[in-house]
Image (cartoon, rainbow, N blue to C red):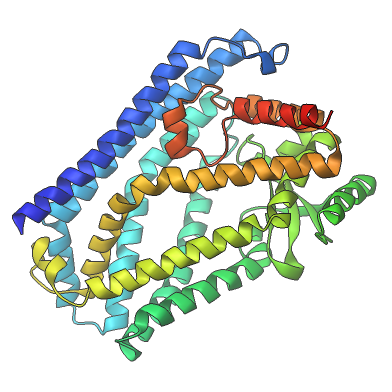
Length: 418
């Protein structure tokens, strides 16, 4: 047993160490090229802003490194230092029924994790993000967000855990399938209610007042075969100056949400290009394909978990004195994080391919590339995006092509047509 345990620890340390090596590789690449203004940004970015961008990336990476080390120490102590064993035995000693024990076990861990991460979140928000001009949030609003998030997560987790554990009790031989069905149905349900129930708890959504602009947006969406009746502005600026736009909801509740910061920074043609790109994901069925892949993986993982908890191998391997379904799930989650890491480049490859398809679709329905490129340049500038990520780093961490690669590919679209 000890040999297997040593192998697991070494595998985890190898994955973690490789991640740190990727970070250092990325920083070395930034140090090597980060002071050079790329041709795509000439006249649009100066040396001062480029230096600020480099410093922002460096500071975030270094802080992420420190917070990651802390998290890893806590995790290793919890799993291998006897804390999970003590915690599991304590929950078992309370003698609650199966469902209540599960709620108590997982909710308390969620609260502990939130509490532990709070100092790091405060530093990142009120030190790093404020230093570089992004944070606009007050400490009061930050605390309110934390409380709301905890209440919402408590409600959602309670529903998922209660029904999931009930299904495990009622169908011990097939629970993996019924739990998967319930989780899938619940995720679809959340897509429907989120725009009206959850999102308004954090932000204010107001209709775009410029009717001509709204008509332009609807025209672009119509070309993509998407009927959108709701276009909203979100008061993102009360928390951050970062810019974004997104589709929200599903079916008849589908709507477009534009950050107020985006409306301030981009002109109408650039915003239409951003939205056309998002529409491209819908038209090319990227979201549906992504959902199918994720749910297929989830079904496989659920079945693997079902098989793994049939005996006490994991309990004995991790020296847990009291056999517990909940402790097994925690251990399996840890093992899955190790196994899934090597697949990151594969998932990112398909994601980046989808982004390129959406860019091509944007050109097909707008017939121009200048707005797409200028939007990417502005978004990169405003968000202080790293212009020189190392290729290996982006392979593991970037779901979108690096911005310079993306701009060059977009330029080729127009040249290929001429």
